[in-house]
Length: 286
Length: 56
Image 1 (tube, chains in turn purple, red):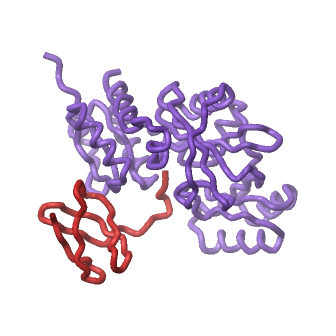
Image 2 (tube, one colour):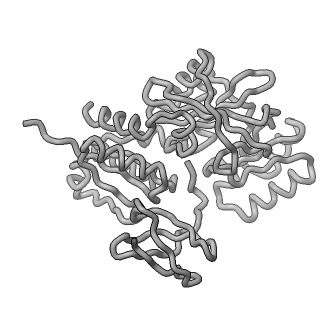
Image 3 (cartoon, each protein chain N blue to C red):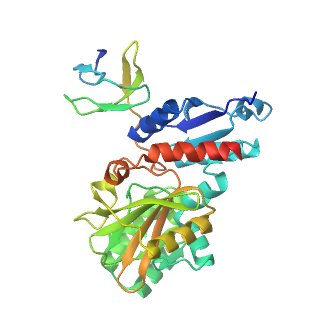
């Protein structure tokens, strides 16, 4: 008799997405464990405790905990969704930009500098306004739209004085006059599952910041850029954020490897949690 | 239905149906975020503060 699959779901908080995922696991009669990332540990001499899992779905809110857990699991030979390599690239905006540039995938114009002086010089060359982003972190936090030199000097000084060492990687991006919305597209493997427009009066359109969602028809152009973006970062279960650039057309703004879909699931009418679980099962059987 | 007191303001909080351990609920009186530690017996604690590397 074939052994029953065993899946692990690594999480930090039971958000509505995790509830849906647990529900989808139970509906399919899948044997799974809920793994709270605050309660687990990895003993390098006891990998078998982890090898009982045919696959682990990583849903940690903490980028660091999720990434290191994936690294350990992959080192033990446990398949994960997503892989550590994909999380490493997607969790860091500069690494994402680097692989997109390598594969000629359209993205906003970015410049990176490692000192406030070099960053100021780069910002001045860009012209105002520009956007300064932390390389790690999300939900639209700590983004700064800089409208003039005074603001640039102040923000750069604050970041280098008050921020952690990572805030001294100055990731500078052109400010895009987008039409009050951006696009969130969900990719599962090499398939575009669904997409939505996220609208907001604010220049930050993230739904975690109060943006609202509306179904976005998947055009061949959207499909093409998302497939290329997914391939560039290594593929898997991804939320690709696109922006409509007035000159360049669609550009990839960022790619999320543990995406939230509390707005997308009701907007699309699709069982995204179910699709995710099916993908994890497929990964486990590989 | 499970009932618990808010550790911040002592307001009585009733768990909605389908509440699960690990879920975050908000105290309707003081607005603090609470993490459900256990459903039966009902127990909550102040939810961890948002960290810099949190996010999707």
